[in-house]
Length: 84
Image (cartoon, rainbow, N blue to C red):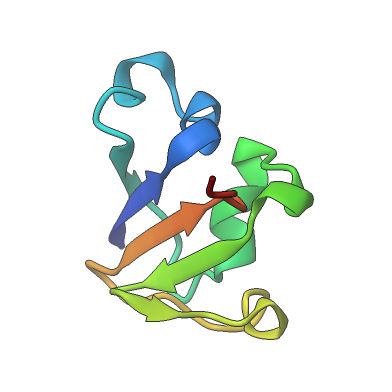
């Protein structure tokens, strides 16, 4: 199944070079793949995986290993950000 995978701010460095400018890419993942399974190959440091949304809805850290993604889902991840 296909999903859209988006990384924001400093996390865009973990995307392939040709996808960084747009910060998103289409991924083919197994049916029922979880957020954790999708992000694992990208080797994102867990301390930088702060805000996780699927189709604009927040996913709590405890659910990221078990929530199955659906075809055409949009998975978006932000690192912690500080304002000033």
